[in-house]
Image: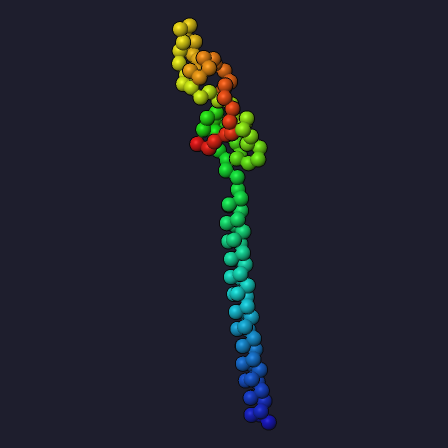
Length: 108
C-alpha cells in the first residue's frame, strides 16, 4: 500500500509539473503575440502620423494634413531688394507686406 501511494504521489507531482510547464509555455507564447501586436500598432501609428513643422516659405508652424490647402501658404517668390525710393520691396511684385503667391505649406 505504501509503494502504491508513493507511485500515485510521484505521478501526481509529474502531472502537476507538466501542467505548470505547459502554462509557462502558453504564457510566453501569449506574451510574444502581444509584443508583436504592440510593435505592429506602433509602426502603423508612426506611418499614420502627420508631418509637422515650420513652412519653408512663410515660416508658419503647420501640420501636414487635410487642412493644408493650396492657399494656406502666402509668400513672395522673389528676392527682397531696395528700390529707387529706398523702400525694401520684393522683386516678384515690387511690393512689401504679405506675400503675392499662394501654395501649400512645405516642410523645411
